[in-house]
Image: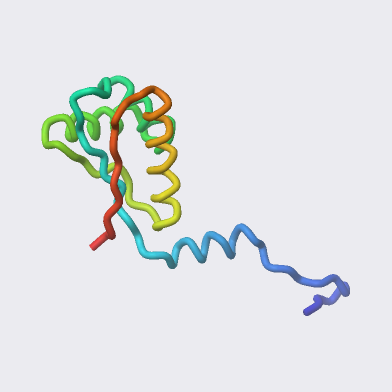
Length: 106
């Protein structure tokens, strides 16, 4: 397809990708408490990988500490998987058993 100037119109790849991601089912990333991983490490990890504010990261870490688990974020499945994998990798690099799981949004 061409426009009036004769140039070929191409879709904006980023817009198409965003639209595809928006259509994906949403998944929850859940953090699970353990008795080894330091609280401050958890807060820093939530801020750096999940891009949460200090206040929200602290709230999620405290909720997981008190109840055993907490919702971190809800994202399209591929993004949720990537974030959980990055978080697991960062924890394992420090020899911490911190665990994240995924579950479909209901």
